[in-house]
Length: 200
Image (cartoon, rainbow, N blue to C red):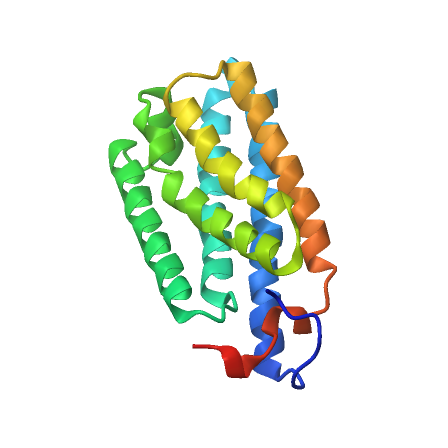
């Protein structure tokens, strides 16, 4: 469980790493919210502009999630190594998206069901972060996000959701992530550090 007491004074490095970790969470929430708005309000006539904006947001999401992955504070070292490896897999999947889409990750989604599947590792990374916070600080929506995000991608990949259903699903995920983010960033920085003597 996360610690809600201060075990030692925070160093400058502690404060910087916690801030970078939380900035990653905040940016992820903003980017997914922007994607939800873009997908919901996009018109067929603006397809080229939407594709470019979606690509830019996608790159931003990989960066923001990466910030959270590399600056997360975990007591158990094997979990952190697993999370980093999953992120590296997600970068490999991004490379595949770029190759198939000829430089545009979003182009893949117009032609095949495998596009959403290639997003599962990055969703897994973000879900790991939200589940960790849910476990440590009882942010129960974090557990829901960790389950809903991959399930959503599987449903989109299997064409179990209409275009409207996929849009509303993304809006739901964005709203939950914003709620989670507001609750997380309002916590004192020391909560993220806990007892450093327990780190592996």
